[in-house]
Length: 345
Image 1 (cartoon, rainbow, N blue to C red):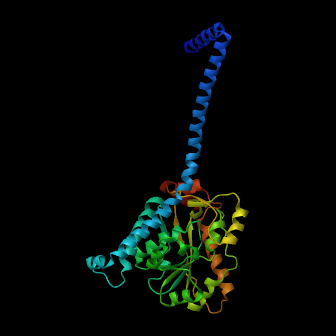
Image 2: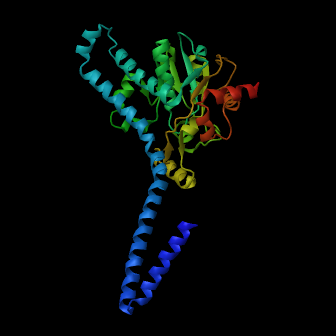
Image 3: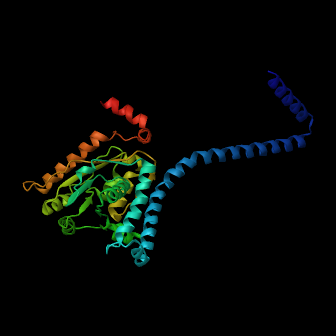
């Protein structure tokens, strides 16, 4: 009460002084007060705008961490390639000089996976220790899960997963070195068959860039009747391993506006144009389903349906629908995971 009385008395004295001033002095005082008030409001608005926009800007800058990791990988591989003779003499490795370089890069990516996303692989035993297999996976906004899975396979199983990438990637600076080291290629039916017949692992996403750009947190498969991967598996007589990563769409997402416009633009230019945001440290788990063995009685269309059903089953079993960034962040907490597990039981 004493504070309010003092404030009232101060305002009263200021008002009395204002009334005693001449007309010119009053006008001048009003201008000064208005200027001070405007300065205060402008400063307050600037602070509010800064606090409001900072999280928004950060969500669009975080995907650059992924880009930075790609170019760090390129730099490591470029240095390794440039000085391979010295390095090979030092490590006394075999003629496949990319082997050590790949493991260095794999160690970087695996460390990022473990620390930033608490990355786990469930069903790694479903990938054969030797011999061919075709891994068919759901394509997120950014296929960061395949970088993580390939790194884990290299470090734990000593096996490299050959990967099919979109043609626009090979126009990016530095991508040629990465694709050479990790055997990433645009891929045709015949080249993919050859990779599998040589006894290698191969990863394909039938949805490709279209699924990456226009999929959402409901995790619907956007394959558009593509059966090329099924033709590859049947001709190579290789098993197919369905693959899905939990919370993939919660790590990186597309903006939710102007979808029709960006879809039309994509259909014209055939490169990723839909802006993404995110880079949130959500929990990632890659689930590898039971192998779908070669069956000569299946047509490519029948096999496509069978594989799509297997991936949809993985999504329905292990993914919260619709996906939630908040719940995906909470998945990082062991106590929260235990509570969910007890609830499911």
